[in-house]
Length: 78
Image (cartoon, rainbow, N blue to C red):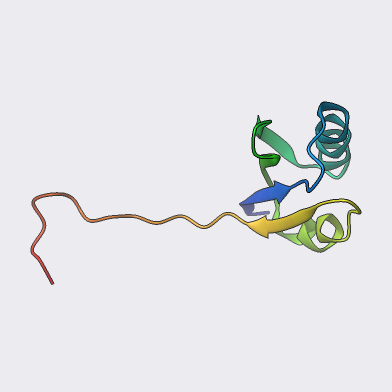
């Protein structure tokens, strides 16, 4: 199954809440990449078919990770 990147925002980012949400994510098969304590965001990856279950977790907001790729500095201007 294809892995997708997700960002999980925790509105009340206490250390205990972040740890609890990270454990829930792991319990649903997600791989936690990093926990950004200062802004209350957990970066993770998960199989695409498990995303709907994660989006129903209480106390957090789960969104797809959005990547932006800039052209190299020597690329033609469009």
